[in-house]
Each structure stands twice: as structure tokens, then as C-alpha cells.
Image (tube, rainbow, N blue to C red):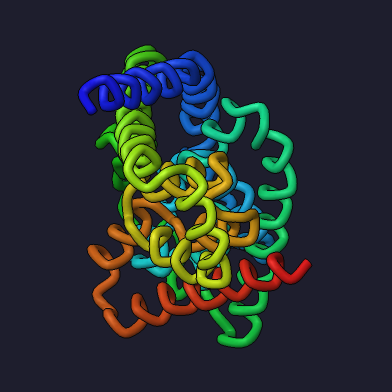
Length: 288
């Protein structure tokens, strides 16, 4: 038993550490994009093209832009449709993890295209049906600084080299820890119930996968996107379930929505609509 546990621990560590260089490079690139794009976000989310730009900003990995969008919506600087477009497009940690795994990297482009198109459809449809409008101009709102998943500033005056080097390193280590814990737990499950039994269980419950993935996606933490992506890489869930979970997952954006927008019914409506539409999309993809 002791030798088996040691083997699982060693295997989990090796599998996790192999992708660390890829994660670090990816997060440095992501930090560069976030650093130079975040200050432009507020200027581009006020016109008729707002859902389009919101979806494009949301595609950038990490949940920083969803945090900014939630705060802007609470001040009525953007419409509900634009907020939904950002939330749906957000993938948090999925992109770096899929890029680091050759077997799943081929599905990254279809994932991003589906999320982009779905975000645009939902965003524009919501604004059309609800006649959403910005209630006051951006210039009337005082400038604030928002913090991302690791409590670093998303915009404003920042130490450039600390943000572009130290934060990607710390974030990579944090995600590495999540991956190691997941791999360890998954390895222990396989050791106790055998791989064949686990695969049979996952396949037998695949009809519920988008529903369950959507619930995981509601967890307002980058760990949820790590869990969903790792399950997909290990063939624990199919592509439809992955899409459902990642379309629901908006990271800390949900936390900031409930924190800053005092209309609880409106918040619950947004989250419920996000969940129902994303899960429905997951089942549609499963059919095809």
C-alpha cells in the first residue's frame, strides 16, 4: 500500500511539473496583453459594438476582464448584454492548460470560436430583448482600480516589471499547486476503484455531464476552470460538458457582481440565465 501511494504521489508530481514551463510562458504573454489592454477596456465598451469587444476581452485568459466588466455593470457603464458576453467568453485557466497539453490543444480553437459566437449571440439578443441601455456616461464615474485573482491591480499605475514577471511566476505556481492536488486526488481514486471502473462510471453519467460541469463552473475561483480542463484532458468529460462549464465560469467576476451590484434579483437573474443557456449549449454540442 505504501509503495502504491508513493507511486501515485510521484506520478502526480511528474505530470504536474512537466507543464510548468508552458504555464509560465503563457502567463507572461497573458500578462502583457492584460497590462496593455485593460486601460482601453472602458473606452470600448460603451457603443453598439460593446458586446463584440466584451467577448474579445473575455477571451483573454484569467478573470481580470470579467472583474472589470462586473464593476462597470454595477455602475451602469455597460449593458447587461455586454456583461453576459464577457462572462460567457471568459475561460480563466483553460487556455494555458490546453496549450500545455498536445492532445487537447487541437480543441482550443473550436472552443474559443464557439464561446465567441455564443457570447455575441447572447449579448446582442439580451440587449435587443431587454432594450438594455447605459444609464449614465463613463465620464461621470470616478476612476477605480480593480484587483484580479491574485489580488494584483488590473489597471492603473503599476510596477511594470513586477506585474510582467513576478505575477506570472506566482500565478503559475498557484495553478501548478491546483493541478498537482487534482492529479493526486485523481490518482488515488484510480488506485482505489481502478481506472476501468472510473471510466465506466464517467461514461454512464455522461448525460448529466453538462449539468454537473455547469455547477462546477459556478464556483467563483480559477480552481473550477482547472478542474473542468483537467477532466477533459483525462477524458473524464466530453467537449460539450467542457463548453458548458467554461461558458458558465466567469471567475471572480461573479463575486464582484454580487459585491457591487445591490440588486440581488438582477444578479440572480444574470447568473441563472448564464447557467441555463450555457448548459443548453453543452447539450446541443453533445447531440452533434
